[in-house]
Amino acid sequence: MELLLDPPHGVGPLRLGMTSGEAQAALETFGPLKPTAYGELAVHLPSGLGFSVGFGVGRTRDRVNAIEVWRPHEQDVVRYRGVDIFGLPALEVVQRLRGHIDLVPNEDDDGFTARDVYLAMWRPFAADDDPDETQGYFFQSVLVARPGYDDTPAEAAARLAAGGEPGY
Image (cartoon, rainbow, N blue to C red; front, top):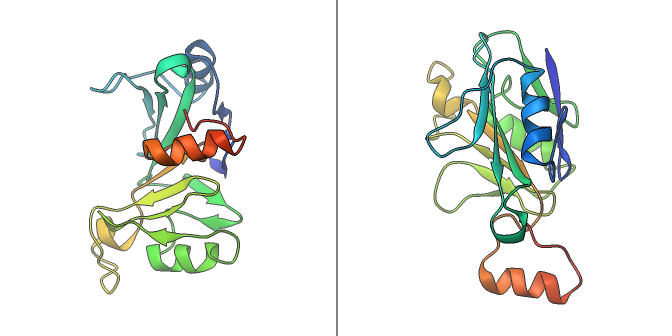
């Protein structure tokens, strides 16, 4: 399967802003649901590819505000702008995507985030010189959310004052 990331709108049939019922129906097109410990809806395919959706808070608590995809072990491919997010080394993914989006290193982990479209890629540690250390050499998950998803209260207030939408 090939899955396309479409930040800030969604991933494949999963769209940000969907109701929980719509998200459940979209996830079930991939396979049976398995709720996570945090109450998110999730699907895990035999290839290792996994999906989960998270919901907002307050007035958006019944709407999808984030979609996370986990690295497959087998043939499935996840792409953004033609770049294989999980099949290429993490630093090569970053280099290729920087021609399209403003990706910056995360302060608290070894991932990278483009806040303008809200695309966040994560790996548990960096092992950029060791391809045999797959968990650090490749990204392990990617998150698509609405811009503003991780705004501080001050950033959220500024976004709203400027006429933007809350990030959920």
